[in-house]
Image (tube, rainbow, N blue to C red; front, side, top):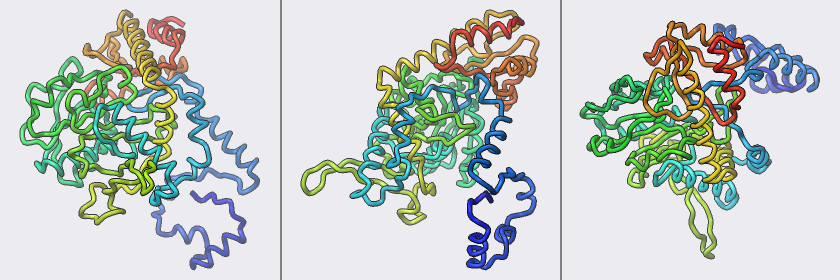
Amino acid sequence: MRYIPNADADRQVMLREIGRRSIDALFADVPQAVIDAHRPLGLPAKSELEVLATLTRLAEVNTASRRIPLLGGGIYDHYVPRVVHHLASRSEFVTAYTPYQPEISQGTLTVMFEFQTMVCELLGMEIANASMYDGATALAEAALMAERIRKRGKVAVAANLFSHQRRVLQTYAWAAGIELVDVPFVPSGRSDLSRLPEGISALVLQSPNAFGVLEDLDGLKSRLGEALLIVSTYPLAMGALQPPGAFGADIVVGEGQCLGLAMGYGGPLLGLFATRKEHLRQLPGRVAGRTVDVDGRVGYTMTAQTREQHIRREKATSNICTNSAHCALTATVYLASLGAVGLRDVALLNLEKAHYLATRIAKLKGYSLVFDAPFFNEFVVRPSDGDADAMHQRLEAEGFLVESPGAMAELGVPNALRIAVTERRTREELDRIVKILGGKR
């Protein structure tokens, strides 16, 4: 944070202007413990060439980029066509800001409108915003929205939700005074929906869930009565699966990283949020709409802005004051470049490759799949000796980047490993994984 490419003399002028003697005095209000916890990078205050050389050396310390990722849990290693980066990096997109003035922001507003349209088509819903920070905050905002609509003070949440999404949801719910009721999962990996909690504003499900398992949404909405059905989903999977909207979901959210965004060591991310028209007034974020001007020409403008920076705080649906606009642009370009057929092909590649690997591992002596319900491109494996840590270390030693068994233990599934397979994994890589687990090199 302290690396600012200004000359010492310029810094002194700026410090005098604000009444500070030094950079340390400027940051004096920051607790020393926080400062000590963040080791400085030690960047040389010299030329750009020297700074680049230092950063390159630091980057080479991280070996993740030289490994083959089997990571999942919400962020996936998908291939991004070069056209996506080319178009998304154009200067008019990179420098564009919030389109408060439609007369000079038609390009940005058009992209937002197209993004919303694609999200609705993808998730099977009627209206979408543009956009939210990430999948976790989108899910938490969905719970708040359901509570505003039903006002029952209680939301049921599936126990097989991604852990990071649950933590964000818990924080939001705590601050809003909403009670969260756990819905356990059965041995198949699906949520136990045999006895639904009563008096809830909404039921929150994830499909595919944290185990990669597809939930059975058929007929669920009718059993919920007045409670809303909130589904968090994997957008890319919708290329091959029926969307939650087809099953009557009231709110559908998702993490949009899989739609053209890099893994990026955890970000930036993109929150998708879609709902029914009847709930427009309770929708967080903002909505771009299409209209015509006085001369009958098509134009785009902001049609709903319910954020607190636009209206009175007590009337606002969300205190989020920005959105992942450039990430939404990237997702729009990605979806447009693939088209419906291309998206289906990518989704099927994920599905088929994951099932190929899962089937081969299940046939190995000493390994089994933990859950038997249908899954998309993630599955959970358990070694018969119960030593998932050894399995994890074996794969990592051979150059595969795998999530720690602790992620499954946090969800109540000890001694197990979650493996994600995307279209980028080759047949040779998958066969090599099988050989490693089978004790061969």
